[in-house]
Length: 386
Image 1: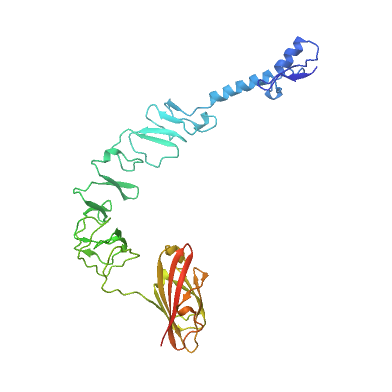
Image 2: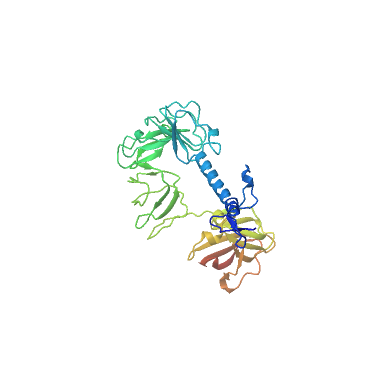
């Protein structure tokens, strides 16, 4: 006789359709999946798949496993949970234990909840929840209670490592928070309209006495400015700024400048090979005081880390003067590059120089106009000074 499966949904077997009818054999193969199965077997491994006996056994084992496995929920008990009581061993993630009598009697392990009057004396373990009965404590508290805030505008500031204090709101409108190492919080409220202000990295606009652009830093404090605030747009009327250092300011409108001095880089260097002209470091004027030792290629760039293309915007221009000293040999500039890429300048009078000038200082004046991304037009001239 043959055993045939009756389907995959509930897997079991029946006698082959071609076999002679035998009710006892049919029941045996239906329940045990085999005509030869011995019902006296005690090992689950002897059960045949598929069979009703194997299906029922698997369901029973699933029920036992579910009963032994705590769900992600809560429990109330007089004693701390023992990891070995759980299957698998250890309190599962997400399982919360609340002590019924308030006496922990040994630190719980893994995911748990602690409900006490006092603040924990050490850092909480991963997964541990601490519920405070008395929310007034703050020292060493792993949370910040709202009870420490007494008024609108109060700020919480660090007073030391793992410590916090309250900076009460300023008593007067318009005050600003300032660094002050003499206070417990390291902060203090100061009058923003004080007569002397030191401004760092503030933005202003200038149209008819209003300065627009970014002021990187003033070397000296602005006195008698009577600013209402130190940020935003301020109007300077008949004020004198003494020795301010301005980094990349932008002036719009009409400005009047009586006199301006421009910085120059003077270096005991001999021109030869490829000369990197770093606009961000050298400025617009560079003077090599040692006699040139060979012809050179001039490479214009921002600096060693920044391209000129990234420094300039399309539609802007700059002009540099490169002063080269020549001795008895008339060395000269043979090529021009921008960010290491060759560019052919348009030379004054229509032709590039074919030599330098002996015992002279040759000045190469170059104007670069950015017309597009990494696209430049250059106008150049060579002038002898002797």
